[in-house]
Length: 109
Image (cartoon, rainbow, N blue to C red; front, side, top):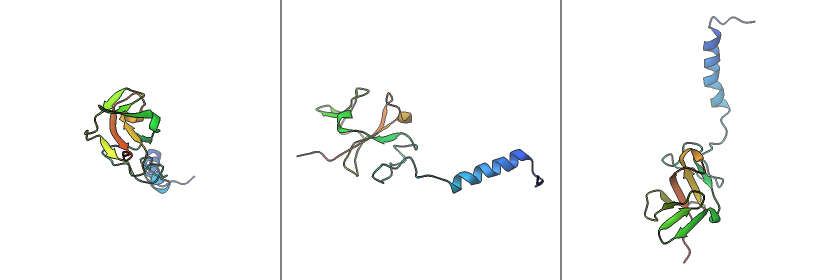
């Protein structure tokens, strides 16, 4: 075995810092369509695409069906969806947590 003159924990720590940089996959805060969720909405796992059936549009605003949370259409949480589908960003990416951002498709006329 080679002796580099460094204790094993220091070598392991150095390798731990270098290896992730060389094998970084696509960022998880990218939408399937390729656009990037803003950092103000996502911490690498908070956002995901959701179906039209999961977000209802009512007179009081957008209703997140799974939680019953109502997001007024004038809320700063509501953003235009770059790819025309709903995307929901919730705390820790959980289905039972509060909304951080809601990306909505253009409204029909």
